[in-house]
Amino acid sequence: SVIPFEVPIIENGEYVGTVNILRNKAWYHHGPKASDSIAQPIPEDMMDEVSMYKDQIAEAVAMGDDELMEKFFSGEEFTDAELTKGVRIGVRNGEIIPVFSGSAIESRGIGRLMDLIVSYFPTYSEKGVYTATTPNGVKVELLTTEQEVLTAQVFKTIVDPFVGRISYIKVLSGTLASDSNVVNGNNGKPEKISQIFIIKGKHQTAVGKLFTGDIGALTKLQNTSTNDTLCEKGKLLSADPIVFTEPLYGQAVFPKTKNDEDKLSNGLNRLQEEDPTFKVVNNKETKETIMYGIGDQHLDVIVNKLKNKFKADVTLADPKITYRETITKTAVGEGRHKKQSGGHGQFGHVFVEFAPNPDVEEMEFHEKVFGGAVPKQYFPAVETGLRESTSEGTLANYKMVNVKTTLLDGKYHDVDSSEMAFKLAARLAFKDAMNKCHPILLEPIMNVTIRVPDEYTGTIIGDLNKRRGAIMGMTPDENDQIIEAQVPMGEMARYSVELRSMTQGLGTYTIEMDRYDPVPDSIAKRIIEQAQQK
Image (cartoon, rainbow, N blue to C red; front, top):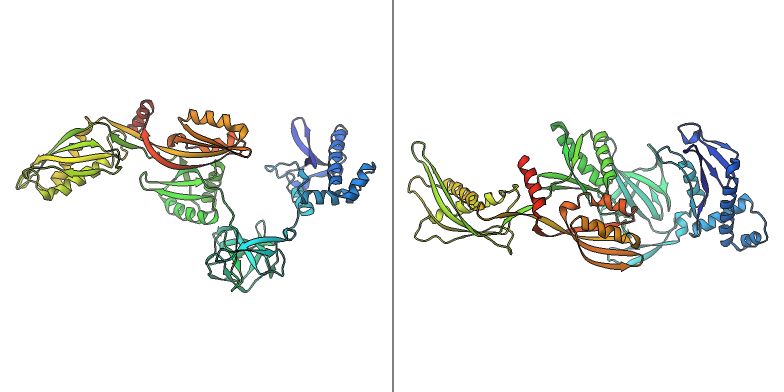
């Protein structure tokens, strides 16, 4: 059912024009614009190819209409009007899938593609009925006609620096008029429709009404965002939400100058309003702002919008991986802080045991001090010093986890001891013990679920093995395979881009955090060296 309606004309390896099979014309490009194309006779050396495709179209057309089928088998040629009628029937019922040629980069064939849609595709009103949901969750069927109750869905929101928020809507049933009052069916809040626009490129044309199937734009909606449905008061309904792709490709974003910093924050907030497939996360641990999108091209568009629309110049980098550090052996560390500088000095002396504690992530603090060697009022200071120390490990400055600390013994001075002195002594005890506890680096392990067509299964499994992944299971689902694996987070930085490349854009995946595991020595050595260089 996939049939070329156009064939590109290639001369010396260059795309120079297009043959339209239905119209028996060749269009040669003679300038940078699509309007510069000139109609000419079909090249002689392409006549056989064009004739073959025309026969395919005629056969497909005949299959969709009894009258045309009779004419086809009698050997008669179809008129242009009959071909157009048959193609319209075939395209609308899905039996004919037309293929056009063109170049998006050079804006070739765009106008012809639009003409194809207008001439052959079904109109929205031909859908007949669609399903909406009441506030109680009851599904109701509505006719796609102007006589039905109003439902209009916001499918896109943009933020214009001059106009403000512009909401693109499609009227799914009924009629939407300017200067009317409507209600948001999703949250029950009222909206005033002041003016309705039809958008054509950069031009906005004011109109009085939008009818079923029309696409238009509204400005200054106060309580409505993408996926919300506008409807009549007392007849609250919501259309099925558009399911947007989950953004999984992340890059850390940094302003180039101090002047760009404020503009960046404003721009990111506005762009999140516009684009449901774009999100921003502030990672408190790594102190990075991370932008998530569908892929590298998506984030390139975001960067260009930040520069052109919000005047914010930024740079991107791979996000830092949130590694962890822990200890593998039990050891006692001694910390002695003594300082004398005239008047009261500073004195604190502690012995602290550090032990692995695999069942509890956060550091635990205990004390087993006998005979008042360290007064109780200094216990909180010792604990604070230890917590501050474990927030940055000794290997690569990552947070230390699964550690149990116990204050065993110590000494104090009636005059010179203070909370600060014991806090500093605890830090010294931490440094002393870490030389004996054999600290190691841990990396986040992610649960990854990948859906790919059967033919790419081998490629994906081989790639996961290269990423140090472990295959946990595979489940067939129609013509796809659902692969479940566990992979280190450090190996998944650009996976959305690489999966798209490996599967011709047909693969999808989800990812979530599972646990932390020790990093292999060779990789840990490299991570530690990089951290020390920084």
